[in-house]
Length: 517
Image (cartoon, rainbow, N blue to C red):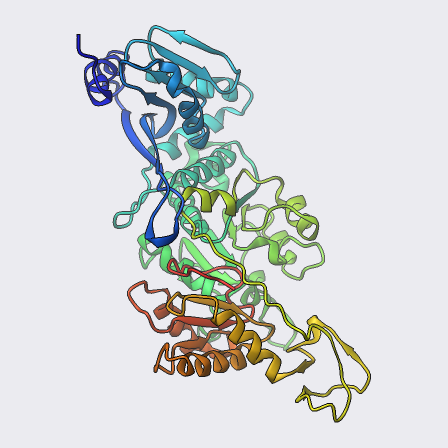
């Protein structure tokens, strides 16, 4: 008898068994194929092997099990490793490996593994996944979790959530459903933290979750009021654009000029966007400091998203902590790309351990982030003692006999020839057509480096365009913002290189950047 190949095994053996056990038959149950990740980006425009699960069993909007299929001639055991890996990535408690005849069930929570006659039905798998959690949680948790799961993701264009994004969204919403007041998500730069925040806000908004209805879901009448806080205008503007599906009537950008024009802070909206600096500014009629955030009642916002929260908001010594303390009744979600370490312990002390983490290494290995190379610049002038008349051109106000170290260069003193050589060094080692970010010591330094880059690019014959390299810093204002937008466009090749100081250090969407330096 001819053995079935994998496609036939699935169609003739596995699919009928799944259907017989209720999958695709019971309301709200689905059988899907999941491309978990596209595979690591390799040189030459190639990729490593993609990771895909043959079946993902979905019920009530949640992925509950991964199934790895092998052709009839192979043992089910050939798929066990993959099944466990896929279930772990998708946060499924149960994994299955099968060759169509034998079904091997793996419980990742208890560690139990065994051959079984049938797949767990949708309701049985749901109960196994959640019942034990629900027994130890307040009753309102299950109500809100179910309501959140019934709200579909807002799939703008052809967007669908990546597996880690869906994990982050679900974990955050589960924590909110359980009544947790402080939450933290730690995901590497470029993995879509703003997109994740949008989907969380979308589900809260459309389920009519609010502080007043948190413990009494039957009282869910009004939409929540949501605040998005950032420490850079570019990040607040980016988030404002990403939240556009809420509609113009629901979102508002809080800006000092508009507050002064209208004489009050905006309150007639559902989702508010601003930066810490704006909320901390403001004066009363007598000219005394009166931060704008104080014009809102303490319980005005139900949910607050703090972007790049490690940058001062959660620091007990930081001025911005006052904003978070003032709005303490709100559920607060911190977003950061920085894992726990000595210099950000305040962030983790305030928000608690992350409800979900996704690292830079994971993003690169999965193929969602571009691998980058670090080009160490080896020079002969990492330290310098200024001696008048030594022939070295030094800008600034150097002191004779003083030892200047790396941290002093381009802040206290500048040696133009040193900077030119450093620019030439790394430019000779990168592809001149790769979009590149160059981080500099100060805004002035970023301007000087921009000029050296353009000079050298023309000299080497790489370009004749004077905008090959541009500077994007706070001092560049609207023109710099426009340069950044063009740089972010994958179809545009100019500008190719951006120099910056601190403005872009928290991350922006620029998918085609290959070699950040």
